[in-house]
Image 1 (cartoon, rainbow, N blue to C red):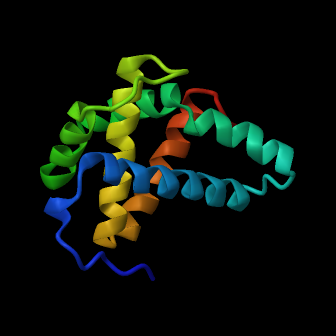
Image 2 (tube, rainbow, N blue to C red):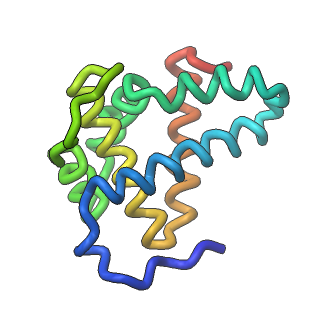
Length: 136
C-alpha cells in the first residue's frame, strides 16, 4: 500500500505534480498491459507509446474533464493552466497542456495515497483506448 505524502501538498508546484504523475501514469499503463497478457517487450513498448503520448492523453483528459469534481477538478484546471516552462517539442501546445493536466491529477492522487482512484482512472484510460480502437 502506498502511503500518502506527509508534507504540505499546497506547497507543491503543478509541474511537480505532473512530474510525479507522468511516472505514475506510465507505470500504471505498463502494469495494465501486463495484466492484459501483452508479454513481448516489443508489443508492450508499441502499445505503451500510443497510450503515453500527449495526443492520446489529451483526448482522454478532455473526455474526463467534465466528470471531475472538487479537488480533482481544481488540480486538473491548475495543471492545464500551468506555465509549461519550455514548449513541447513533438506535441501540439494545447494537447501538451491537457496531457500535463492529466499527469498533474495522477501525481496529486498518488501523493494523496488514493491508489483506488488511480486504478479507476487507469481502467477508464483502457476503456477509452479500446473505444478509440487504439488497443483491442
